[in-house]
Amino acid sequence: MRDVVTRMTYRKPPEGTHPPNDSPGYKSTALRHPKQPLIVIPQTLTELTGPMYPYGRIDTSDSDLTRQHAGEPQGERIIVQGRVLDDNGRPIPNTLVEIWQANAAGRYTHRVDQHQAPLDPNFSGAGRTVTDADGRYRFTTIRPGAYPWRNHDNAWRPAHIHFSLFGSSFLSRLITQMYFPGDPLMPFDPIFNSIPDERARQRLIADFDLDVTKPEWALGFTFDIVLRGPDGTPMET
Amino acid sequence: MAGLTPSQTLGPFFDFGLLIPDGEVVADAAATGRRITIEGVIRDGAGVPLPDALIEIWQADSSGTYRHPADPNHASSDRGVNGFGRVATDDEGRFAFQTVMPGRVPGPDGKAQAPHIAVGVLARGLLTRLVTRMYFDGEPSNGEDAVLSLVPAPRRGTLLATRIDGDRYRFDIALQGPGETVFFDV
Image (cartoon, rainbow over the protein chains, first blue to last red):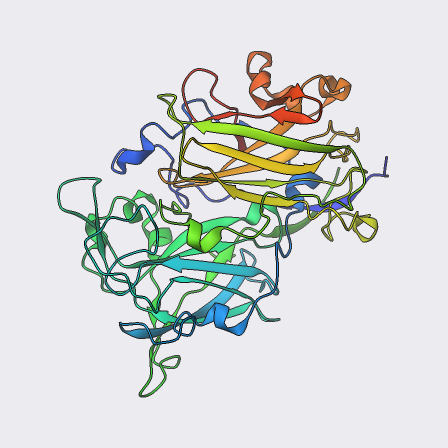
């Protein structure tokens, strides 16, 4: 056994930041949310560590979803960039950022997606990159289309890009979705609106960014992501 | 203090974005320790298997060291143990991992924890990741584990992987209903 270790703890997410798994408006939650209360456990070395760089080589085409095939995909080319920070405002460098999305017509390259919209042979819709020393990431992609789903009558998901992040430990793992400003479908979407806190919800909407927009080439959007981080108070364990 | 980014479901159509080569291999052939496989099924509150869940696990090597800088011994961690596994369930809700039996890692009370693996569950219909732990049935140190002791005795069994035969273990996950798996707030 090792000697006593001094380590950091992570703050709990503020109430209302994350959606409750029991969210009746989103029908698939009905049979998939635990009914027993979660059991509070201490943060041990198991939780304070985590996969740092889970796998493999990253190629430059991995972060440019418009250059993964012989031809160019259909749709509106966009740049999505931002910083990955912890909740103290510190950048998280060298962390994996994975994205996946529908194509411009609102169709995923997935065998189960039955939406009557065309696949694009030049667009797969998956990307990944690693943040730089300042926590920055950048993707070039196509603006995804809205698509219908069967949650309720005439249900449509607002356009969104899925994001997956690891951060500094098992506790900072996050899967989320980025939305686009001004999308008229957002008020009707039970997934977006499952987040109780209005200000937290707004943080999932990217900002249109003229400074990121490249003339004659692509619109730019900025989407910063904030993950749980050590709160800076050492704890004797 | 910056505001946290909220969680959202990964939806049904994630595998082309998140599946990784050898995601089921947590420890490779060079790893030290007892090689084990873990197999299981994840089910919803009606007992129906989930064909669209993503299971992620994280563990120490066979000496109880994590490959992460927060572990004071990380520099000597077993290079054969990545420690991380990620798989999607198949159409019958099944998942499987190949790894080594993790060693004991320090606990909150100064005592070593019983061997365990951290588990994260993501799926369509789950808006926020669920977190649990897998322990091993019959492991003598389970009785003194600080985390397991926080779980009411009648529910502890949901956290125990049971031996199928030899080095094969079974760990099923129930999101809801009879035998609902214990999930944690950490």
